[in-house]
Image (cartoon, rainbow, N blue to C red; front, side, top):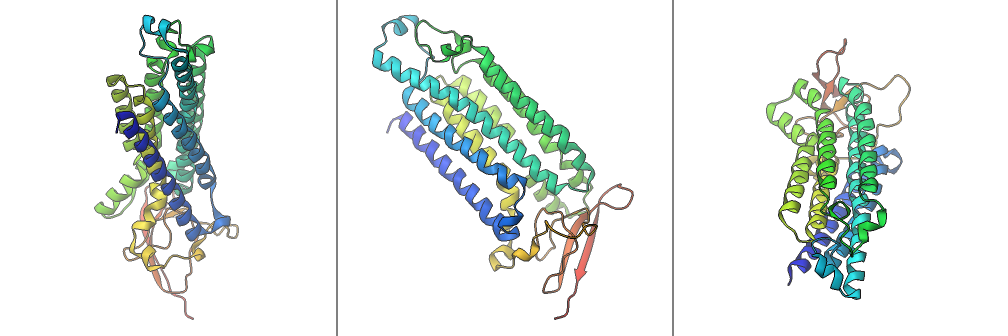
Length: 341
């Protein structure tokens, strides 16, 4: 098996894994809140998955066809018509792949922000959501403008002969450095949002660490983005940029869905104790309380939801992160509901 074949197989395995993650997300969400109570991030995620699907297809084409880079002037001059057509196809696939790559990453950023909006509702961290959202949109536009304007005329992106120059090939450092920079800045801003909430939460240290890893897992996406750029410049293989783009976006897909999938790792989920009765999107005016439910030590009614006081069919004890009067600090409130049948 050749290196290209191995890379192609890896790409489709990663795509299949990402698809399973998305399907699990909706299985969890629908089981917990019901189809009618899905939120903004649930509607945004399919768009990210479609971007990922298109990017995977383009990565496959680029891996098989090559592109217009890494050729001497003499080789370009004497290239066969068939190889020229193949490399032209690969170069065009790279263009589409670049737009779908940034489209997926930035759509996932918006999806995570929509999730954090729900998590931090009623808390001071919620004030950071809108500014970071605008920053993400502006950085996405910057990426698009940079790609469109770096190579003029635009058709040189797939020109074989004469050499179009480094700014019209996948090796263009402007792409990698600029996108890496804005990618890291926006990810860092997103990671910062839940940190104040977690630092002030009066939770056991181990639980606080676990929540930090779940809510701030964007750090792993930042590491993947840096590794992608390093290996792309280190390896001249035309398949390398496409393959590492798939690896980075797979990590991003996993991180974006990890908070939603967290209930799968709880004993209550596997005991079948979750029910749609925990839906918390529709309630009378004035009955909403600004807290984030993290779950009791024995069981959890619902993860990461802004909710009002719940009355279940059995006695339950639930811990919440509650914003106290005056808006200073965060305290734990233990709520015990007893309902006689």
